[in-house]
Length: 167
Image (tube, rainbow, N blue to C red; front, side, top):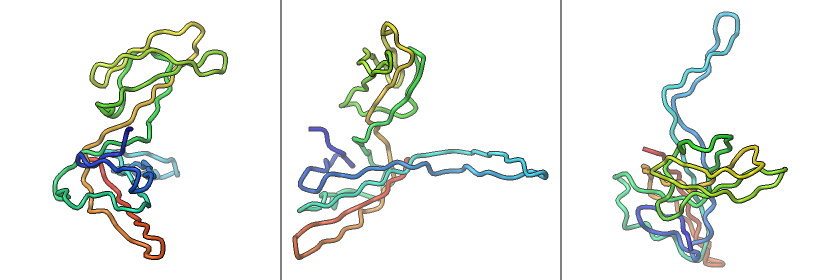
């Protein structure tokens, strides 16, 4: 089974199925010029990853050193749609789960062969394909606070959550 992992510790089923979401954080602002025209200024953008769960045990992260960067292996896939057969993924894929691809053929998704070298992909052309979709589970190096944790004594369930930010 493929688990979300933080600092090498998997979030196992008894800690509750992890809910994952991604959001951009960073130096992006929109400013207005003298006649109201919008100008976008971007210095940097990183990913914030929020993960939470509820189970009959916590995730077991109390032994991690939250003062240091940690590796976060996610299971929520990212996806890229492209007409190109070669390119580069925008984020690092998990080393233990290879990316997978589909081709759009007559409005249907058909598996497409993909090979990877680092973050560079090469797709094998599929007859009749109009574009391709590549999916991968990302891995990030993050700073992360110790998770928020709670417990409901009436049914012995443990809630936990954290938001990690890409280094």
